[in-house]
Length: 189
Image 1 (tube, rainbow, N blue to C red):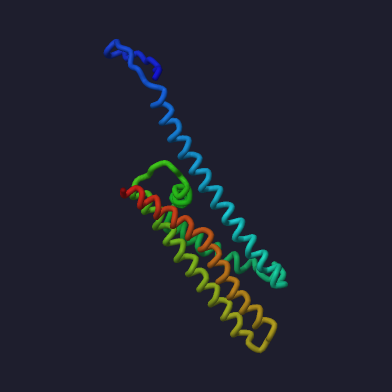
Image 2: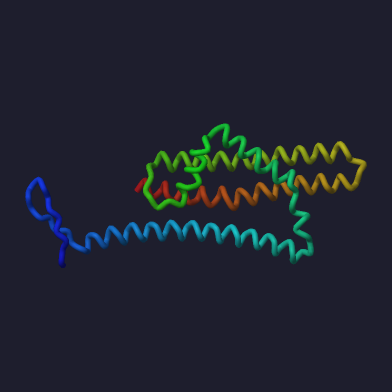
């Protein structure tokens, strides 16, 4: 093996480093970066695929996608968890919780646990927002019980909020929680 010489001022000697040591450290960091990018891309493709399957299901059942879009319901299921998250976590902590799941760089056990706690809380916030949305929809249904048109609309809103919450839990909370649990288990080895 040939080496690279580096002059050590303290001992006035040449230190030899082999090319193989440099290659190993370079390949290790490169493989970590590739794995990080692959994990992120596979997550994005999974989300796009899941949304595509849902759109295909709408298409094959003959329903229009507009029946599955309700801005008020979507606002409830997004705003309540965001407000509750910001009451317990800073924006920097939320950003770190999302980014730490796909980072190859080793982190401390406490950082993984903190990020995992955020996603556990987010899961509860989404479930709570769904319950609040269902209750609002049922109040609207029961106040206009005689009006058959509003009765169906109110029930559909309550089902949509369950659908939105389930989709967000499955596409956001579950993958990030799983990735963080894997990283936490690896850090404990």
